[in-house]
Image (cartoon, rainbow, N blue to C red; front, side, top):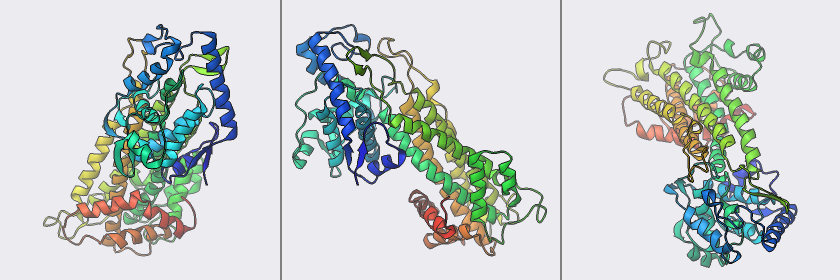
Amino acid sequence: MAVVINGERLDLHQFIKVTRDEEQVVLGPDAIQRINDGHKVIKEIIVDGKTVYGVNTGFGKLSEKIISKSELSKLQENLLKSHACGVGNPFSKEVVRGVMLLRANALAKGYSGIRLCVVEQLIAYLNADILPIIPEQGSLGASGDLAPLSHMALPLIGLGEVHYQNKKMKTLDALKLVGLAPLEKLVAKEGLSLINGTQVMTSVGALTLYDALQLSKQVDVSGAMSLEALNGITDAFHPMVHQVRGHTGQIHSAENVLRLVEGSKNVTKQGELRVQDGYSLRCMAQVHGASKDALEYIREKVEIEMNAATDNPLVFDKDHVISGGNFHGQPMALAFDFLKIAVAEMASISERRIERLVNPHLSEGLPGFLVANAGLNSGFMIVQYSAASLVSENKVLAHPASVDSISSSANQEDHVSMGTIAARGARDILNNTKKVVAMEFLTAAQGLDLRKHQQLGKGVNEAYNVIREHIDPLVEDEWMYPMIQTAIDLVEKESILKEVEKAIGALL
């Protein structure tokens, strides 16, 4: 079933349907009317000869330069060519699909002055899976994502390069294969309408956010496995403890842990083996929960931005074509810097639990580095090194991009957001964190085997079984890389999470 866009109701779930499940996109009838009304205003301005930024002027510091009517189409084409200055590796297919969807949805609000045929062309490319090649680097995140969005827009007029049928090719070659023709030209304001916006940072950030929400469930599972492997104390997860503090994410994480270890004969009560656990176990719900709450805040901001008008100028009516700053990425830059921190902390506490499992001074009787005949065998020693390396890398990446600004366009654009850099940093931190959580799963399963565990909790048992279906216990030293990669694959495909939720009969 197609996703209908009108600039008002797109959400994260629909976004994932289009970007990953490749659902078709259609314009809602109300959006069509609004787009036509907005373009009518631009036509009236041109007829009247009124000077309006972006319609018949230059751009940025060149905004005082008036452009003749005969050159308005060339102005828009030149804008796309000159601004397509991205560098670096191309964005992934799903990111580009997200960029196209979000830009079409923003244009569907009707405040851009663009012709309906341009929006329809963008959607036609998306539905045909003709995806512009968009380099990752080059956006300051104010005046929108100018450089990457220019790479998105050029193919609409037959220029630039696209990805189609798993091949990089010239745009015109791809269009011939599907029987589409490029737009003959762009008219007043249309080039600017295509590139003034935050859709690149929002696409990268939205995909990262979705995966982070899923990972926040998986880290509850890996943490519960470690709790059992270390004979952890469940009193710290008692509902009364979390209700009196009141944070939703914390309450939810504590509930998850208790659900996962329900029926376990490995966990303990305070005073049975020891009075209390280290913080990476005892404060698991507080730390995981804080990340959960952060992710929900970020989700709210992302879904607002998905349906935002980010053009400049904005076309309200003939008397109100207003030059403002909705293209400025600061709302997303701050949100994605927060996303970096929230995800990095999942890795940080997960790695600390790995350390407790491998350290014979902290592991409550488990053999050092989780292997027999330690010394001859190093066991899981370097698994912890690798996890620690990723956590340290995350700390560097978590430095906020939004606190930086470099003036551009001859100081006309003297404060920028760096929001796309923030989003890309969040994506990289997420990828590192998936690896750390995978290592915790692998390490905790080994700990459970060496503990000669009794009955496992209902959820932990299912997680353990999935791991052992794919990875054998370590008896003596062997090549660790394939084991780690298999665990990472289980995390990335959410294989453990899906089976655990089936086993406990609830979503985490």
